[in-house]
Length: 154
Image (cartoon, rainbow, N blue to C red; front, side):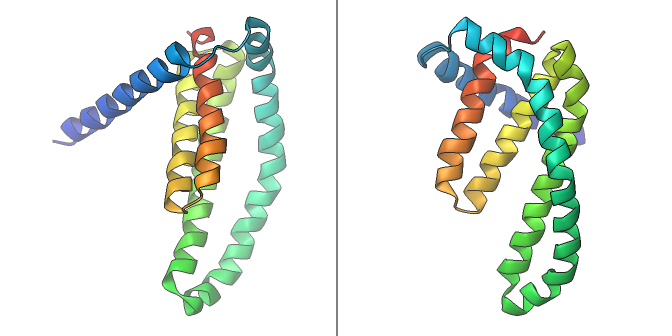
């Protein structure tokens, strides 16, 4: 029975990917080829830089949260949950980016798919935190760029 749920989940993600492909590649204005080439060539290195910069922040956030969460629960259950959810999202996205990194250099489709999942997780996080600007600007631009360069990954 677990395989049925897994296949439903994957079919939903594939359907969403197809819909986004239709709108972000087929109907949206295309980026110039030179810009796409630049993004594809620079993206693995930018990912490394951002992961290196994020690591001390994540470790600090985890340490700070371990200290502040008990006090946040006194302020309200939602505050403590928000802290923990933010940390969980940050850790999951960092792990997915680390896993995707070798394939980004080799332009593998599975790495593009992992970055697609990172963008979706960011979108869900923005929705749950009611951050509409983050959803529209951050997730929207991320998905647009990802789908514009999708054809470079095989």
